[in-house]
Image 1 (cartoon, rainbow, N blue to C red):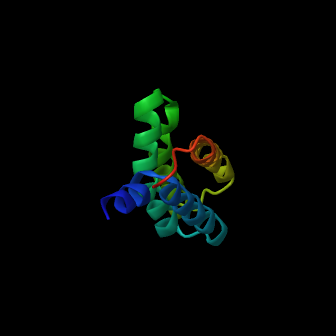
Image 2 (cartoon, rainbow, N blue to C red):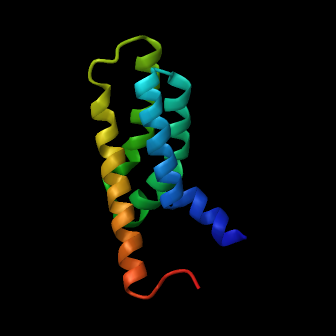
Length: 107
């Protein structure tokens, strides 16, 4: 049970959920969905940024800033905010596939 909780907090499901919520928030122009996307991106950003010292720790503040910008109706360049989150999701997907191919998957 603990392994499942860790996966849904720091793993690929959390970052995909953050990406989907953020995308839905930008399309529907709902700041609450963007804020939830930022909330769900904290765990994966901490995981990816802590181990390799990548600059993905800026993803949650970017999403919270995007939620504020949607609230203020300044949505011109907000699609650029999703680029770091999308790259982090691609990188985490690569890590999961690499681990599965190496035989280190869940047992």
